[in-house]
Image 1 (cartoon, rainbow, N blue to C red):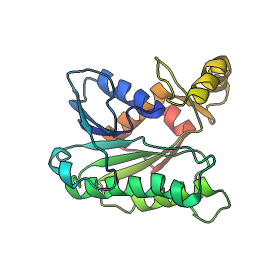
Image 2 (cartoon, rainbow, N blue to C red):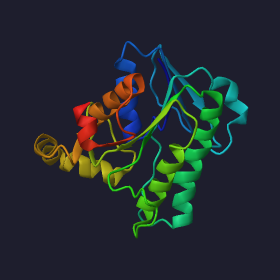
Image 3 (cartoon, rainbow, N blue to C red):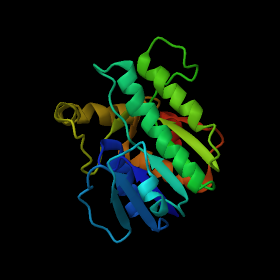
Image 4 (cartoon, rainbow, N blue to C red):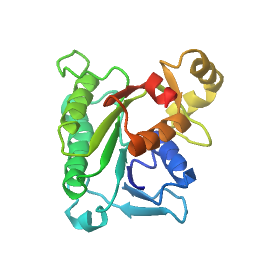
Length: 219
């Protein structure tokens, strides 16, 4: 299986990349991003790409892949809706539409979050935007598309947030996160489980297109 990974330098993407490189059934991982991952591996290729709305210059390098794991995301804290929509909806759909055209047999997996609003009508801004993104991804002509909605994610194996204060919270709360993962799987998963579940869904599918934390952990 050949994978394209967006967001490999973020906390979620770091965990997904680790699991992909550990899986002997994955032939190639192509990481597309604005900055290098800093990793070296025989099965890892990287493309540094600045314009996440236009892939015409690199389309020839995006063909022949079996799955895409889209792990790009930003916090909505302090952000206007139009800006958040651009960074969440516009960028995701530009990549997905390109990949659907180039690889119609691809499985596309998108990481959103628990509480995403599929109705697109709720009062919570980020949830509406994520809901529209999910809905429109599911309309694209992929072989299959899956929306992963983890609640809390416990980073493992050296996975770190790029945001200093967020990383500090993870360090301080690590014992609590471990406890919650054991007693409340509806609300907590790990970076390891998330990555493994995405790989498993890309290989074998899943009975429903939207996966919550409990689905991720069960996989």
